Amino acid sequence: MTLIDSPTVTASTPAPPAAPRPPATSQTLLGHFERGLDAPICLTWELTYACNLSCSHCLSSSGRRDPRELTTEECKGIIDELQRMQVFYVNIGGGEPTVRSDFWELVDYATAHQVGVKFSTNGVKITPEVAQRLAASDYVDVQISLDGATAEVNDFVRGPGSYDLAMRAMQNLFDAGFRGFKLSVVCTRQNIGQLDEFAAIAERFGAQLRLTRLRPSGRGADVWDELHPLPEQQRELYDWLVANGDRVLTGDSFFHLSAFGEALPGLNLCGAGRVVCLIDPIGDVYACPFAIHDEFLAGNIREPGGFTSVWRESSLFQRLREPTGGGACGSCSFYDSCRGGCMAAKFFTGLPLDGPDPECVRGFGEQLLAERAMDAVPKPTGDHSHRTSPPRPRGSTGPVPLTLSIRRPDAPPVHACAESPLAGFSPDAATTQTLTAAGCACGTDH
Amino acid sequence: MDLPPLDLRLTIHPRVSVRPEPFGALLYHFGTRQLSFLKDRTLLGIVQSLDGDRSLGEAIELEGVTPDRVDRYRRAIGTLMASSMLVPAARTEAAA
Image (cartoon, rainbow over all chains, first blue to last red; front, side, top):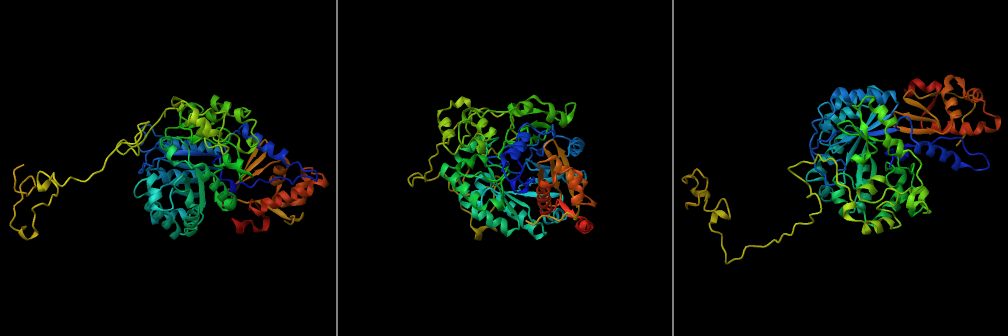
């Protein structure tokens, strides 16, 4: 995935001469991208692991702030570097980036230094006042996350109250006159049937719909089996994208679906470490936002040379920029458009990186998933989840068996107050009744 | 699409940044948040010499484009105009 929202890419090239040779020019451009650029086209920057929500599929396993988080000055240093490298814009995320107390200061600093900002938020800080301020700036774009067109579907993955939070934020942006902000949806088994409804919500708020792929990254690895779209839903999604592709953004997420037929718009290239990367809250640089794992850690911006030398010299990125043959997928007739799919999706499901994507539309991924050894699935190397509200038990504990029953009528409670705290309380007698220190008025000594 | 006339005077939109690359260049428009790829160094040269004074024809000539290829570059320039990466020189101040 490139993180570059495809409809914003308007390649401009001299038209081919009479004898057509378009592949030559476009191959050259893709070839350049595959070998990596001196600076990323854009990058994702997770500002904090702190988050007010505990989404079950959080790709960065966010929740708690990391005490090693970059300081304001360090963040400004990164922005200076991005300006020097002519990185035009950053996708800021988290965690919930707006909970950082210096968030607006950093956004202002970036836009004053020719680094545009698009930030992702669950909407928690998008008050009417903030919305006004955002609407006044050309250089800042906002992306509201919503994973269900109804509260029921959304809150199932993003937690209670998160639907209302997002809807309120969008209403505030709309009321402030902000047009064209992004409504960002991670496509799941539960919401594939709601694509038209998402489009309607976006239209209602003057927003643009953005659909992205669910990755088995972070906590997403724990819920991927239950949440990732079923094979027939992938087809439904592909058909919807073909029919509506000109008005939705995808961040080039779905190039693995191109094997269904015509290629979807976009670069159709994994840009990890080649044209995009991720900077995490403590300055670690990873190949892409879906690959927060030691295996894809290129270096840290706190090391001498900063981000620039990590980007240009890290051995991991050098390796990712080497030509690949396609491995087990090399002989597939769809390899040119699908390119073996997503590296992170393969890695976190325990599949070989040079083979098919777990969601390969030809079913080769599923076959491998069924055959893989369970210990092939890598363990996470970082986790900032809230300790008090884990969305799901980690590991392979499976569902907890629980039998619900009603009390048998032949076994009454030992005390009436064991059933109701107001047992024996009569409003009429309230003026004369004296409650004991323990607070129970049932009159027995227990 | 009609080809832009050769006597047109164009300039890069003030909110557009140009990043030269071995394959050509990346253009980013901070106002529309659009990204464009120039897949050709010659095209980059033409774009960079559009300073508002020079005509499009002069800019194309300056890059040594042979007559049989001129229309291809005009078409590419037309694409960049359609996405507001390039604007007519007279309109620059209003567009800013």
